[in-house]
Length: 121
Picture (spheres, rainbow, N blue to C red):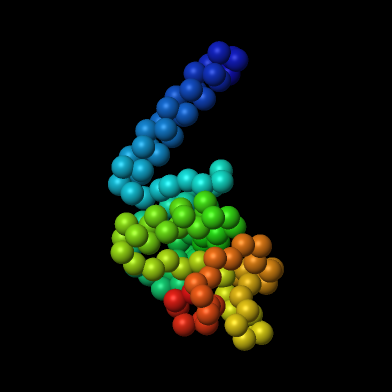
């Protein structure tokens, strides 16, 4: 394609993406923080199904790495009045948590006397 045609196609794609993002924001399905897009389909599912759906969508289950990212996740929790699964699991050491790949957490925002592993961290 000629350079001008490429520019036109890119402009059209940018416009379509912008419109789709607008619809998703309007329907409370996406939010952004730290250059990341956080999304939900608004449906309840178990942890394994959540991890799988995130992979199918080309992403991964949310793991907050800053206060802003934590707030992005809380946006959905508050809007849908439910809990959210995170990409965090309890390590072999009781009371300690880690990323799903075994790496250490770089950010935490636990409630007082948490984490306990009882779902109210």
